[in-house]
Image (cartoon, rainbow, N blue to C red; front, side, top):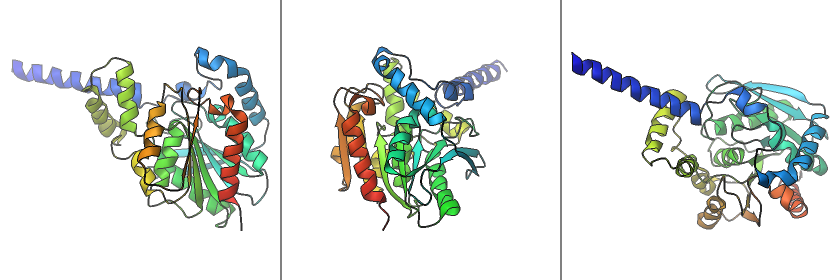
Length: 312
């Protein structure tokens, strides 16, 4: 009898640990994921706060239409469609982990408008106006991104070219969607700014930074599978690159210590993909390449998009 009680207590403790891990890594609280439209705390971001906030405020002045769809698992997804030129290509802008689509998409949004293209700014599941509570590190979100591309076709026409443009987790999501066999033909190219090489690697990297033992990752994986219903080790941008049939522009700041620059560097070196352009930005921290080297960034981004989204 005593051993049954002890066993029950041990199981209870084990499941409490799993729920705590899920809450820390995979739970998407709307307050935590959506309210802050400015840059994260940290001295490296201080020189660029005013410029980013200016971009966010300028983006908020533009009219948009709210689009909503249902994910394959029933989660309600929301996005904002900004029409610039009717019938022009559409760039789907994808934000990062526990971030805001206003904050992360503001730089890309203004480049898209300069190109004369339209933009669909998505709120990833468990962020912004979208539903759900589980952040899937791109595993769940890649399916949602494919649905958004299909929604562009349904609403605007089969002939409209589409591109994915993501930052951080949004970039990783875009790459994994690009390597999915269900990718619609309308998606012509991808821009991935500071993606991680795999959900597993970025999670292990964060554990190492927090001086936590390696055995915590298997617990994270169990937590994700039991509670979040996804496996963070089931796919990766690294693997997806070799399967991706469309051109990719891979951007990463060389001073990024949040998503290490080495992840993109390794992807660029190891992939067999021939139509990949790797654009490293010296001295740039996480997500700051556009602010540290604005002229070169805009030139590279716009030339890539114009080349692959040019309508015939």
